[in-house]
Image 1: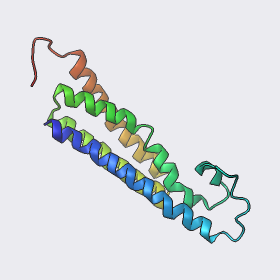
Image 2 (image 1 turned 120 degrees about the horizontal axis):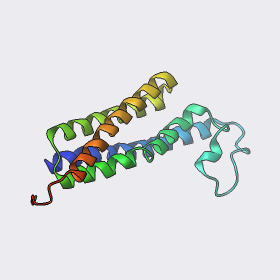
Image 3 (image 1 turned 90 degrees about the vertical axis):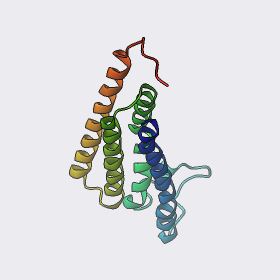
Length: 150
């Protein structure tokens, strides 16, 4: 069951890398379409320097990439804890639900970015993460120290 618990985390890592590479054509495409590139920023500028200089939609993949480095870091920690403690089929299911919602959230934010549904997706993924976190607390806090797991 441990490998099954790690699989959703591995998929979310790959998804985060896909979003990283989605940023490149989005931003470079927007920059290429600009007639006046003189306001793009200084030498050594950062991605956020493009805010307000290229269309908002061109920055949405970068915004989502940032989001994939925020709350999901808690997900990775919880997955590791549950994997060590011995996850149940329910834990694996909730982890997949979390990852599925995060992928839908990414697609919605990058392609449509209407806040009401984006917030509901975020809320749903947060609830799944809370369930996993509570399961991790239960698995660790109430673990029987006399039981040896392989």
